[in-house]
Image 1: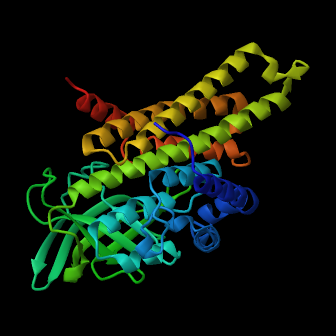
Image 2: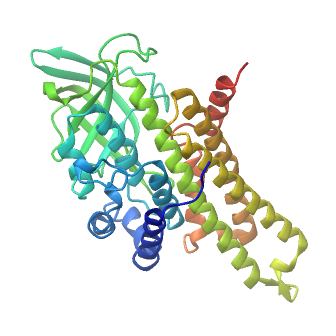
Image 3: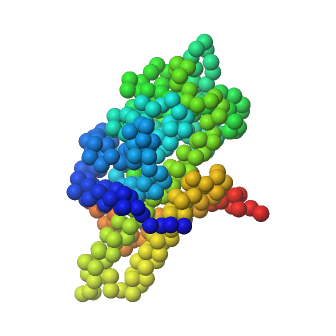
Length: 378
């Protein structure tokens, strides 16, 4: 496997890193998350106009650059290092991939590329949790329209979105993956029958629960073939998981660097605590966890274009590895900082919350361990 980056990929990473170092302030970001609109629209616009990263992985016929999983990994890792809350993974990686595979959404993809559209996927439900394949929300035909009924839970960035992608069952039973369809809903002005209950998550992101009661949509709201959305949803889930794994690696690298620097500066008994052998061993263990996590992410990214089983196995291995590493690195960073590690004033507390949340996005650590065991069963 070739782990070397092309000149274009190196430039992408360097340009984004420089931009985030000079333009993305953690204090401003947290203020927007806690008391403002939940994000910084001017940063999102700069991602499109100045950096072009919103189109880095989207097709050229939509105005994108036609990049692939490696570009998504580089961008996500840089965003994780800066603790960016703007919805790159959800809009570009997950929704962008679904729209591209469904076809017929070229204008919306172009709007994503130029920063004019934010798209959120509503797949989880109250009864099934994060199991996207268990869909109780229904869609039935009435004349030329579709009518949707049901509910969706924990829809990340729904309150920021201009459009929603909603999964609904057009046939079969709730546990069947056959019969799951995907619908596009424009929510610039929420249509009748759609109620959005927004809230802030523990890691300062925005999410919402949705209620769908006789939500009437035109015939062209259906993306792709009715009842055949599950393979694309599986792929989107794996691509999203790989991207947040890369994001977690960026966050862990920042947490480790800050912890090492703090231990050099913090003095106790007349000497820097970083000189204590027991703490040095702790930081070495943190470093090893980060490097193992990074290697697992590289493996997953290089398998995203493989067959479904190969892709799923590599992604689950990465997600399980990331889950363990994020927990270990986050908890040890807080411990080495002492009680101030969880204060709002220090960045380390914000990173810890994000690393905790990452363990449950696109499938929990336990769920991916179980999937890997099933895929490797003799």
